[in-house]
Length: 155
Image (cartoon, rainbow, N blue to C red; front, side):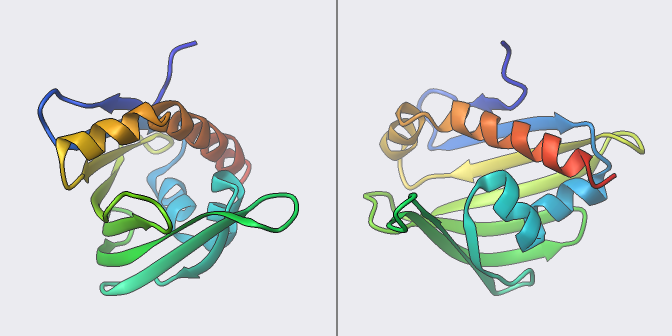
């Protein structure tokens, strides 16, 4: 089955360019990234903090069935334009990866469809390649599939 989320990792560059078209109006797609209740559903994580504003912060945490934290990430929001764009940092706790910079652009295609473009910049090509080897692309595609399913019910 073809992945709907396209991840382009150009050789020799320390960045990823990700695109995905959704059968959602742009306002609903944007809500999926900024409303904690929706984020928790499609990402399968707990939102501890989500301050959607310039210089705001975010903090997510995922636990296993026994309650042990298995994933934790946080960052700072540098730019926030409703229904258009979010620029933020992303840093995993207890992981060998330094912070990365993420540019998210939300674009209406029609009244009922939209496109998400993500430009992620890593500290080095090697770190970007390591992230790709960890199953980043299929994982993001699965998460975006869940986003589409969950948010479609909000129409």
